[in-house]
Length: 151
Ligand SMILES: CC(C)(COP(=O)(O)OP(=O)(O)OC[C@H]1O[C@@H](n2cnc3c(N)ncnc32)[C@H](O)[C@@H]1OP(=O)(O)O)[C@@H](O)C(=O)NCCC(=O)NCCS
Image 1 (cartoon, rainbow, N blue to C red):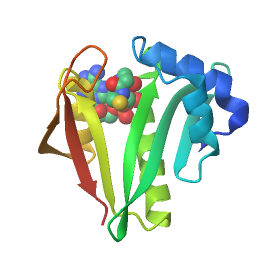
Image 2 (cartoon, rainbow, N blue to C red):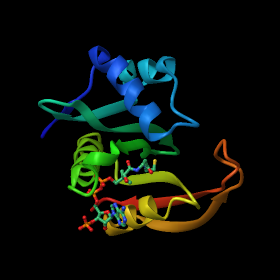
Image 3 (cartoon, helix red, strand yellow):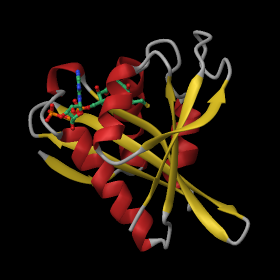
Image 4 (tube, helix red, strand yellow):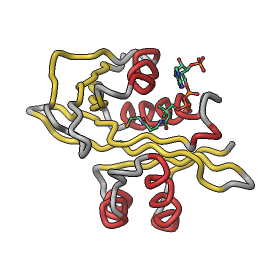
């Protein structure tokens, strides 16, 4: 497995990956393109020699008061490649990138219906906050906000 930053050359493959992972609310190609070229976003991809891009993570950064906050905006690994530690590695890479950018606080949203993702993030040290975002997703589900402070 190879892990690296994605570029505009990956736009089509990332669009396909998003659609496979999030059939009802995949990011549009336009949004992915904007994220790929933004200085306030970073996209890592996991590439398998024969299958191409099989996972990705999108992080964004934002100034809040005097410090910057990182956000895990999207994380996806294709079904057949799950449970092999790929998402764990992608989160680690993004956390390293956030550290390089002097970001110590990371936030993410996860659907209240997505027990797998919640367990996944908890294992990596993310904590559920009391902040619930009602009807955050297209299917009407609420989002839980999770947070981690990097040491
Ligand atoms: C959540 C997701 C990214 C995890 O990817 P992954 O590559 O399978 O994750 P990892 O192999 O790194 O899993 C690490 C740990 O997470 C937990 N976990 C992952 N998948 C799990 C599952 N199906 N059931 C229970 N726990 C699970 C386990 O603790 C696992 O550790 P273990 O393998 O030692 O048991 C993947 O399931 C996915 O793409 N889901 C669809 C999209 C999504 O929900 N994204 C996150 C919200 S934006």
